[in-house]
Image 1: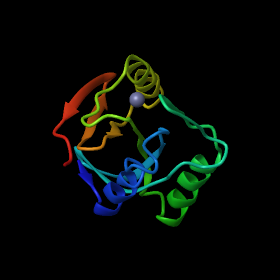
Image 2 (image 1 turned 180 degrees about the vertical axis):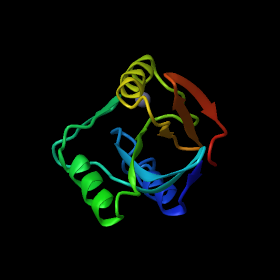
Image 3 (image 1 turned 60 degrees about the vertical axis):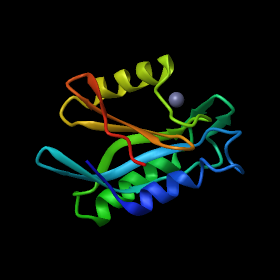
Image 4 (image 1 turned 45 degrees about the vertical axis):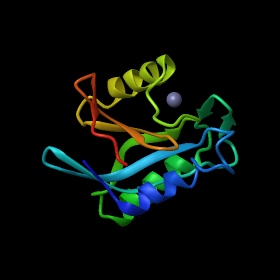
Length: 141
Ligand SMILES: [Zn+2]
């Protein structure tokens, strides 16, 4: 999996002290290349999303709208490939709710692998979901 530098920077903006008291999140947009996925862009919190200290619920239709826009502009090569959110932790790990949510999403995207990122203050958690199984990958510094 390749995470573009600007995606890492974008997620990191929401793990800093100004934002750390509210979780943030969005979707990941990228390309599948054989067994790999390249993540090129992410969306960030929008007005209708629900951000709390211990949760992020993506509700704003703008995320989906952006995915569709990018898909069209890229001649259908850039797709929804997963999602990200932040945790108010140094080294985040998925909660029970995260695992349940991701299992649901894997069920709805059976044909493709999905990437799940949790941004923490010191490191990121990256999960790879395929065939309804979640595998933790090496964290991005
Ligand atoms: Zn979480």
